Length: 394
Ligand SMILES: NC(=O)c1ccc[n+]([C@@H]2O[C@H](COP(=O)([O-])OP(=O)(O)OC[C@H]3O[C@@H](n4cnc5c(N)ncnc54)[C@H](O)[C@@H]3O)[C@@H](O)[C@H]2O)c1
Image (cartoon, rainbow, N blue to C red; front, side):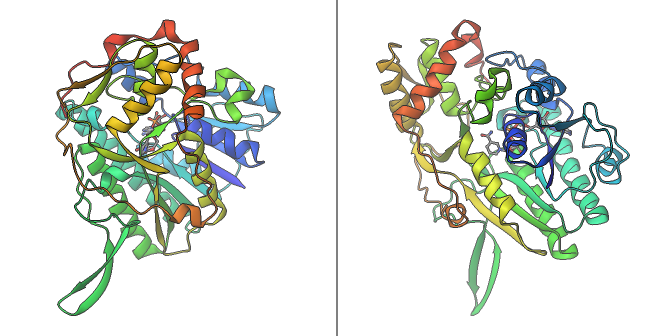
């Protein structure tokens, strides 16, 4: 099958490209290095250097004989997006430069993914809204005009729901009101401009699905942790890029790096904040199972993509235990919370849907953490502790 991956240079996009390629699919990745440039803009840094996207495709080809076609282009430009479907856009790197044709499935990762980035100032808020919403709208219209039967898999976020005082269902809620019943998108209440842009993505797609019978799976994902995937073991230069700073780093990733740097773990406020988390390998599995069992035309299928829930304090305890076993003398600090969020709250999301289509979840065990620590330790010399907390408030 031809799989088109938007945002294919990203933390999740590149491992997805290798995952589908390894399973015999023809993969095309598109990216404009938005994230790499944003990291330079906000003085964030990767834990280790990462080759350019065409270079990674060449390394992958040399190691496996498989081709991942690369297009470096900005998807917030509507003609560029449409060119992916008409064949007008040129490959930056490909063994066979002939147009692959319309995609069977599109993975849409191409967005600005950081809440603190979106609240740095009005300029970054505008960049987030413009980039995420225009890219999503470009995609929706291109699919409607060129490939209406193509299955879109979009990565949403559990942050769209916020932390309501009722159980969180998988995307939909049945409502009875004055004796009548109907089904609506589960109420959403984001705590950042980034999360708001993701809510608006869902609303845009839901409009297109109702109106033009498009088909989409929206995966409401929790924060992802980890570095290594089965495919990146082929050559360590194929590992995804990895941030540990306060703007682009996610909490477990940051805690492991902080432990290795002998920096106290930065628990925000009381640490009772509860969220759902998953291993990067489970992200790949969830996306792949969604591809194998596509949504029907006219269906907006929503899964909550998490493996288990933890409070921040529970995460800190686990990382501290494993870090200490590895000789890192890990301390836990409760720092003033830079976020506006409830630090103790009810949180009970449903997340059985993906298991229902065949996903086998991998929990965060001590063994998993040991493997994660081992990779971070290899790059200890690169860690810049000044990036852990720079005082961004959001
Ligand atoms: N990583 C997580 O923990 C997590 C959790 C929940 C949801 N998500 C969602 O998953 C998706 C992928 O996240 P990620 O962590 O891989 O982020 P990422 O920033 O690493 O990947 C996104 C990629 O899209 C590219 N991109 C952005 N705008 C583009 C444009 N206009 N044209 C072309 N390329 C563009 C970026 O350069 C980047 O390589 C995002 O939509 C994010 O909201 C991620």
